[in-house]
Image (cartoon, rainbow, N blue to C red; front, side, top):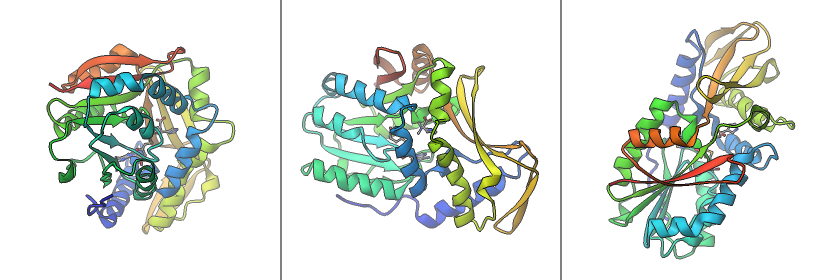
Length: 319
Ligand code: SAH
Ligand code: AVI
């Protein structure tokens, strides 16, 4: 395995965190971009979410990959370099790799270095002959693929419906940049969560054990630790609502009282009930998602769904 120099070193990432928090909390509608939810603890908590009964996306997508893995591998062809966006624990990747014929390399890309390294070491043990080239980077910025993968055909893999965490226009922009990065003739296997009844959707983002709340509120601990914050976590709450008009879950940190806090020596006031938006999770219909992919220059092809129409996996190609 090769660990190239981080595309963005730790210091700039922390400066970006400071800038995002100070700017985001100065706006009339307070917000912090969701990528900052994923420090080492955030990634662990996300893993705990994926194992909750209420959180259907992970097990459903794993089921789809198991059932249709061979069909997917046949579409991708032999000798592909698999490039995974937001790889996290890479828990789904082995299912894909096991079906693929002579994959040329695996390139996991993630903003959380700890998760990236742990997953790469684990996959290296599982696939000792597969070259693994982890890239520690923010995929919302321009990134380069490692030179080592050379001219191998590329299969992008973007599971989990992480695409849903982008606003719709940002999602189109991301898909267009991913297309340019992967290049002509590449494929992209992408998971997209589907619209469904609220009695299934809401508990997936507001579970009985409070794990999702811990994941959201971990951002407060991160602010306190990394940005000299003095926020008292018990004075805030996790709030998940469904925006029916846009078709997305919206996650907020809600202030439980009027209060003033300090971050990096600056004061921020919150009124009781005021919310800081920290994540969106868009839910699509299949035609909506295909339209979004087409807008970004991808050709839409096969779509696989589970028997309850909870989740969809799309195979896109780039001419
Ligand atoms: N692919 C895994 C993990 C999804 S969780 C799955 O399907 O279960 C989302 C992952 O994307 C996390 O590992 C997080 O660290 C990563 N991530 C979020 N925003 C990112 C960004 N802007 N750049 C790179 N990685 C990001
Ligand atoms: C990573 N992403 C696809 C998750 C989702 O379902 O939108 C993040 C998440 N946030 C709370 N629960 C899960």
